[in-house]
Amino acid sequence: MLRVAVLVSGGGTNLQALIDAIADGTVRNAGIVKVISNKSAVKALDRAEKAGIPREVIKISDFESPRDFEKALIESIDQSEADLIVLAGFLLVLPPALVKKYENRIINIHPSLIPSFCGKGFYGLKVHEEALKRGVKITGATVHFVDEGCDSGPIILQRAVNIIEGDTPETLQKRVMEEAEWKILPEAVNLIASGRIKVKDGKVELS
Ligand code: GAR
Image: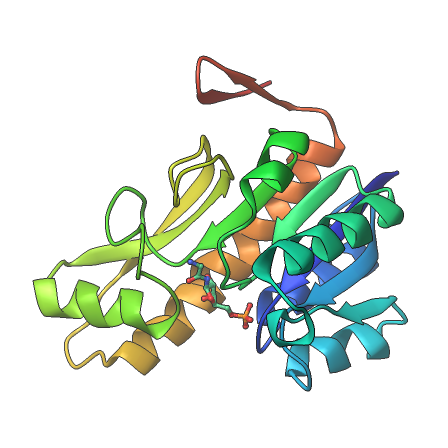
C-alpha cells in the first residue's frame, strides 16, 4: 500500500475527494496515513477526523523561526513514513530540504492549466480572478510533481474546463474543482500507487 501524507491549509475538498476515492475503490493500493495542516480550525481537519485519519497542526506562529517550523514539518512527514506527499490546497512554499528529500514523491493540485496562471502569488481564488481578467475561454486544473520552483515540476495530469458567460471567480472555482480537481487528483494518486508513472528528463511518462 502506498502511504500518503496530505498537507492542507483550508477547506479540504481535494482531501475529501481523495478520501472518497480510496473508500469507493477508485484509488487502489493507497491509504492516507496523516493529514498535516499549517492552520488550526480549518474544515480539512474535521474531514480528516471524520475519516479517522491522524491529523496534526504545524503552524509557523508556534515556532521561534521559520527554520524550526520547517524542521518540525519534515520530522512529522518523516514520522508518517509516507511514500507520497499530496499538497491539497497547501498554500505555503515547501522548504527546499523537504523537496530535495522527497524528490518526485510530492504532488500538488493547481487550479489552472499550467503554465498559465501559476507561480508566485497564484493560489486559490486569485487564479480564477486572473483567468477571468485575461478573458481566456478555457481553464482547468493540473496535478504536477513539486520541484524547487513554484508550480514548475513535471506535469502528471491536466483537465480543461470551459469558462462560461457570466462566470465569477467563485462560480469558476467551483466548476474547476468539480469537473477537474476532484477527478484528476485521485487519478494521479491511483497512477502513482499502481506504479505507472515515471519521471524522465523532467517529464512524466505514463505506462
Ligand atoms: C484548490 O482549488 C486548489 O487547487 C488550490 O487551493 C484550493 C484548495 O481547496 N491550490 C492552489 O491554489 C495551490 N497553488 P481545498 O482546500 O478545498 O482542496
